[in-house]
Image 1 (cartoon, rainbow, N blue to C red):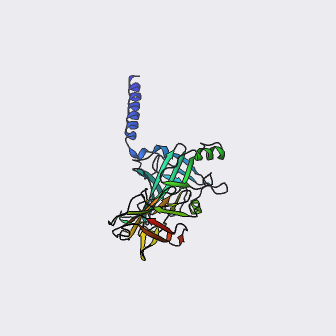
Image 2: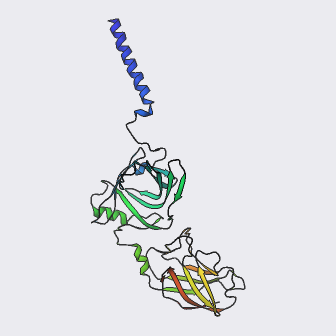
Image 3: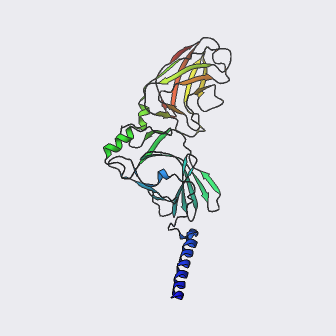
Length: 313
């Protein structure tokens, strides 16, 4: 009887030790993910459904707690999609076994059962970890995609009501399929601009503020949509038979157009924003003068009618 009791105790002890050893072994995890799950946002865990138009396909994304992403988009060429948080940004890491990986940097913000996403850029890294390049950069306020947590809303009416009462993050001007009907094209509904003498007086200096320019009411923003290496918005003026060109993004321009907001890569004229036209190292007007406005270009091939003459003093 004593010998039998000894063997029972020994078996129990060995079972306990085995369990302890296996707990310390990372290979015992049920997850097959090779993703780095050190920095994740638990608010993103779970299944999310894209908010879209009623007749469009609803895309699904699942953020796993092991750092893996499942769902749209699907691609037979990549073997795994991972995610992690870098500061305020969501990084999506897409592994291609024969090429390397793509790193997508994304603005994101979770608001309860809603999440806003806006893609910034994609970088490309080869199998040796060498950065091959960075795709187009987009840091301007823009149209975002919105996802809602699966099962959080009983119907579209409740979902749309929640969307309409939610403050969009700063990186979103619009959302895709906005329930209010707002659209990026609304910014182009503006029909006229008004230019007026700036409240500052002109001097013999070469950095005077000359005029303010505002656009009649519109929603969202008007942006110069090409590369940051272009000139942005353009204003062509004539003073005392001398022709000058004002830009937003050219340091050597005769005069510059500036805004109260900060747009590092793209020139963006946001609703209610007033532009200031100022001398830029050229003394355009020293005393009272008449400025003839020839054209206000909003994009390379678009211009807006408005004020043609302003007396500046």
